[in-house]
Length: 230
Ligand SMILES: [Mg+2]
Image (cartoon, rainbow, N blue to C red; front, side, top):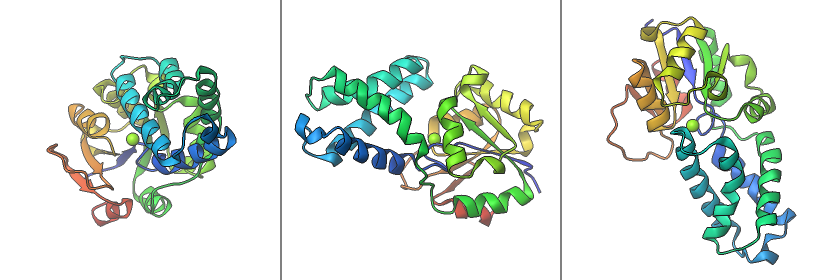
């Protein structure tokens, strides 16, 4: 067997970020009665937030903004896009979002089945750019923690995916050779290009079947497809 170690991304790969975000924002929409503040459509509100959040995560990955800016400004920009001027409400939403969302428990279909199977044959790890205080809550709330040997956080290593140094650090921490290691993730830049630049094979998890030009070692559309070749 070629591989011994499998490294997983968490958000958007195992933990269904969009679904969990949707649930949290729907709660907050009602909690803060956002319809009274000029936000008439929940779906439009959520879509606007997801767009802004994704843009800001990309800036964070490349060190253009820090964690505090990412956390505190996401709702400011969302409100800006929605043409709502209410700084206090944006801050309250931001605080409440950070408190609630990590306790959401939606995982991609097949997460537990795939990990249970893989754990018998391989040593599993997590590499995440997500924040320390939220990633452990997410993994504990969804009973994921026990599958993994090493959980590597960019905040601890000082490097974020796609920087190859976080992959080198992870290999060292897991005592894994690069040629027997595989990275599974949803982000073509952070996970796939990042792992490739460190010399690791990659599995692109592409549940929405987004067309792309990137070269990947493997591509899957559901986690259970991992069982076909691992
Ligand atoms: Mg991800």
